[in-house]
Length: 233
Length: 219
Image (cartoon, rainbow over all chains, first blue to last red):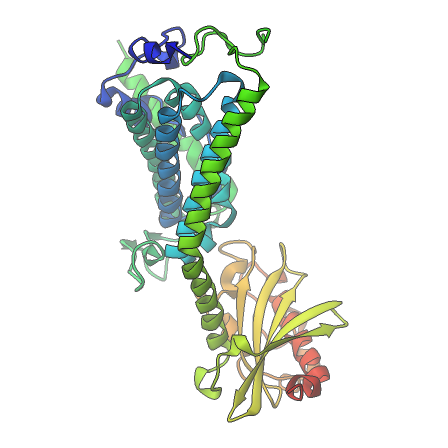
């Protein structure tokens, strides 16, 4: 393990993910846009599609997932000299599941109604492969600060897609935006940001799983169109 | 240790490929990680336990208060419960008994409708001593959002339609949804969910009548 320190100044450069990205702007750009875990890598789609039926649900799961990926990146990076290759996956899983369980306990204590609403999807953050992928591909071979920035970028990128999809589905399906925000912030009920009113019946399919797939597909289309515009000669 | 061909040999933290350390070292490191994480979890658990317990207690209290007006009894309901076997559902039901000035006045029964559209619908049914429903609330369900979830009190007032009903009003044949000639509305696009709720409330009332003496004389 003597070469651990050596590795810090000279990271491997063979795979695309191993590129040294010291610049935090590059790191943020990668996580949020160019290499967004949800909309580019298509990782963690199960919680993404299942929970994004309202903005506040998406926001809550997004925050919980972002916290998890930042903490797991920092911890994996800080202890990377002890993580032997043969046992790295069990160690990542121990770290990630520990963090998620703690976040679950804290949410249960401080945002109880939200915790009940998200239900099984809080413990299921452990199985979000976007988090394991960052631990394996980035945090285990980069210093703590870079890993933290990468975690923030990845977490924010995932959360952004969750929130965007949640907002679209809520608007179409319920005719509101950011309803029930008190479940996460404070105790007294807050009115939604946008409310189409009682006469809007809502398009049910947007709230149901098929609507999630269709709308997520449209988001992908939008992003790809955006990218192809940029790369035109 | 011979090198393992399944492992990438150019890992960032160990360029020589699989480490020269044996299983003892691996076990030790894994154990250390597990120990530290467990310790952190134990601390979090200790810090949050009290708050989680009080959250859960408050939640039960709130729902109980919704199905039975808080002024009609003078003690915490959740401290005065018992389990009674229901031969129809073939399992125990939790019953909370409300006393006022030492006399039983009402009970709140847990009910589970198993014939909903998807999964069980868990409810609390408040019944006063004369057999009248004082309130029904759904505590847990996984019915279709936007259709079946109108049984939630936050989404529609439908569930409040049970207030004041009993086994004779409406008469027994009317204890179903309108589609089947009964007294209770179904909602647009959903008949199965309300029918399951109506049936279960009725079953609960029947059960209440059959165990009334047991419920109110146990002290």
